[in-house]
Length: 193
Ligand SMILES: Nc1nc2c(ncn2[C@@H]2O[C@H](COP(=O)(O)OP(=O)(O)O)[C@@H](O)[C@H]2O)c(=O)[nH]1
Ligand SMILES: [Mg+2]
Image (cartoon, rainbow, N blue to C red; front, side, top):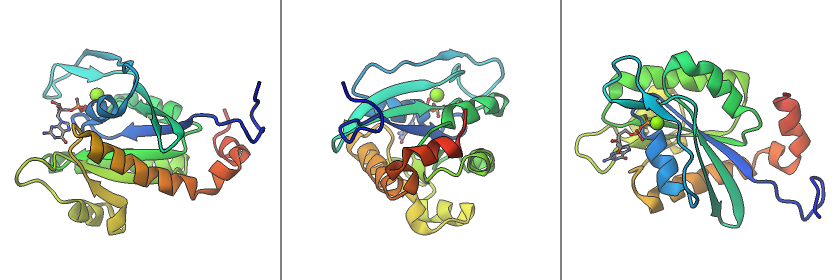
C-alpha cells in the first residue's frame, strides 16, 4: 500500500473551475470528465436567465498526461460564495471562466477571482468561453480588463475537448511549477482545514 509521502504515492490533483452563472463551468467539467459528472443542479431561485443552476458543485475526474485530476466546478451566484472558499481548500489550480459574449458579467468574474485569490493564493488562468461564436471578447482584451498578462487568459470553446484539455494542460504547467506541488505540506499550511 502506498501512503502520502511515499514517492510512489500520487494523490489526485485538485483543480477548481469558477466564474459567473453562464460562464461555461458545468459544460467545461462535462467536456473534460472521463467519469460521469456528479452535478448538483437545481431550479434557479432568482431570474438568472436560465432555468437550472449549480447550487453546490460539479465534480469530474480525468487523467491528463499521467496526472490524475479532480475537477470541481463551483456555483456562480455570489450568495454561494462560501462554497468558493470550501471548494478551493487544498486546490492546486483555478480556472476562472468568463463567457466572451457576456461582458456584463466581467465585473462579477473579477469579484469571484479576487474573493478566491485573496484567501487562497492559487495559480490560475482565465478561460474566455464562446470563442466558437462571432463577435466575442478576445482573451487578450479580457486579460487587459483583468489587469493580467496576456498569457494568463486563454480563449476556448468549452464544448470542445481538445481546447478544454489544452487550457487544463496550461494550468497544470503553472500548477506544477508552483512550490506547493513539490511540497504538499505547503499547500496544507496554505489552506489549513
Ligand atoms: N457555443 C458555446 N456554448 C457554450 C460554451 N460554453 C458554454 N456554453 C453554453 O452556455 C450555456 C451555459 O453554460 P453552463 O456550462 O451551464 O454555465 P455555468 O453556469 O457556468 O455552469 C450552456 O447552454 C452551454 O451549452 C462555449 O464555449 N461555446
Ligand atoms: Mg453550472
